[in-house]
Length: 156
Image (tube, rainbow, N blue to C red; front, side, top):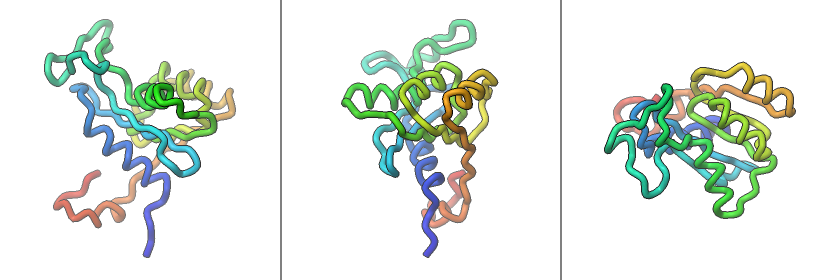
């Protein structure tokens, strides 16, 4: 029996988290992993207690939604809230992180950024990743592992 590779397993967890997103512009999920164990997850959405974009539309200023906290930040903030160390961890994200999220990820000590889809990949973010000695890796999901779910249509 061939098992799903770790990178696809954790990337699929990020996809599952993205289904909770309340952003109407882009559904993003992030899974923080240390030693092959999930330590936190996040999706993009509003601050707890605020209205959500799916309910009252996005709050756009200069092309950005001010209401949304990005999935990567929500995963990091979950660790901060519950006192979970992130040093040496890895993050799996459905989309390449924005510059602000990349900086936060690196500052939190995350050593590898795995992502599924390119999304405005920032050159400075890529240079920061290299400069601090972290790495970035694009994951490809192999359909054969997800056809076993028998949900009728392929997930990806």
